[in-house]
Image: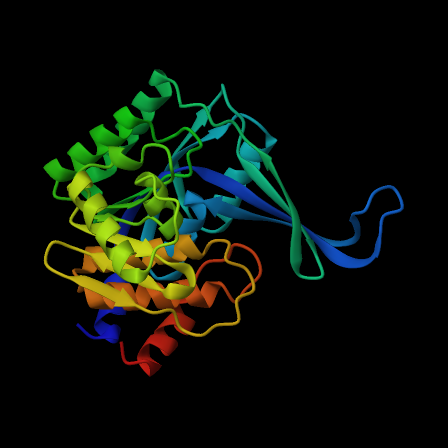
Length: 325
């Protein structure tokens, strides 16, 4: 499968993104002095911005790549929840499966940036698990959409949406409908994602799940990825290794792609771009080699920009074509 054909297959791929949505807010400006009140920099505020984050940023990445994402998540009954829905609609994202949970607030991560460097982050959130009536509504929303989609993404930020029971029921439903499942896990619920198609932890999450604290070499990481894959019964474990690239482990092969040299500015959102490309590759039936190469490239590209931003399809296509992936 060549790059042109793969990108054509991305077009109109229907993807259900089930996961924690949030607002990424940015207060940015110049730092020219230190506060006389405390040894902290003073930011002369120049700009305020709100962007979609979490699972909503995954949806933006998918849309940027030509796919048709549907967000299934919960938001609070608050001003931030209204703003989140407005941002989704402004970006042309489908929101009819975005459910209001009256018992929680909408997650907002506010980053304070001075001279293009992040100085501080403030989180507003509730991380308790969703209650059973809300879980039922989420499950029903997935059930109503399962026959329309080509792949389902579970984007877990441990904000309470993806409970063990919901994870289990949704994966079972996907199996019954032959819909591939792609997972971006966090520390909680790590081994709840039994039998998924592609499981994408980062190196820290992978080693922490196995209670490993020492620094590992590539061959050792390959062994850990294989152990985790077998515990999960997953088809593929794709581990992001930061500056060491990406590793995909299956029962048949292990593929490693080193990172491309980049001027790293901000790693925020890189995992979302990697996940989005990987999910579309899974839906398209791309090889592990091509999936690893293209996902790796996408993660590097978004790291060259400040803040959480979706991958630019044209840039990704151009660089992938130049590298003859």
